Image 1: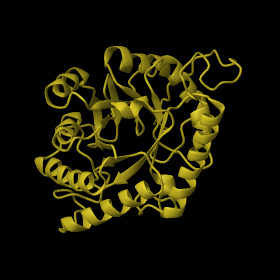
Image 2: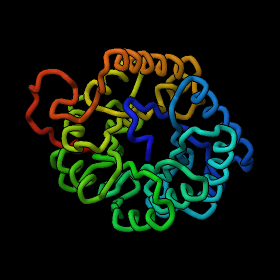
Image 3: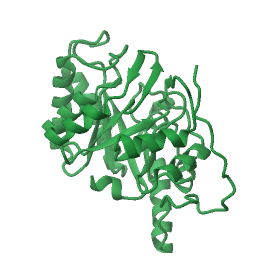
Image 4: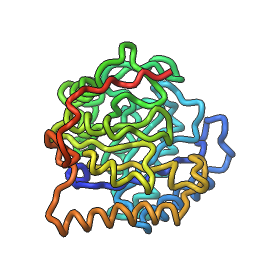
Length: 299
């Protein structure tokens, strides 16, 4: 879990092509490997700190338990990436909400973290009702992968709660009752930007637990999120060719975003600052937003 102790972590998404068993699978697993290796290699070469691998091509997603073929395919891809990119922390997200499968893969390949879209409570999504299973996930982690961090979404994108309440309350439940190691804040859909106010609210509520922004991060807003209290950024859509989530990683886009974050880090280091330390005022400016924003009620 050392990755979560770092400030200003930059994580690149590796969206896998359709895997065996999914409607879009092209019957050639090597094509999945080639795409993953290419995107991962570009991200690492351009200075990203870690990678998050997910089965984004497996539309439409299973709500919770995915087939064994998905787990097997993702395990093989991650193992290849681990060997090709030694020392780079890897994360796993098994869409739409199979934390057990993610932990099994993490245990097999030594992944640093998993992402869980609905860890506590429940959400209404395009897959139907997804229920959090924090009680099972934490016990499974203790048995299989005790060193793997759990990053949990708050107000998960492409979903809405049954009774939307303050975002801070959901963050507190994730941290205090779900024992999440990190909290993720997103926009309403893939590629949509999170509001800086919600990042601030989540960071205040999470306290010492790191908050990362996990959608809508661009070269233009990346440092603004860090100033708002985010200790990490997960980037996908904006660094793809043409800004299309299903495209390959665009080297020039990835380079520019990483350059801006790296320059911000360097300025902070030279000034002796620790930006995003989850104080009562994580943005470092005037404490002028005491109101609690409501969680998004999404159609």
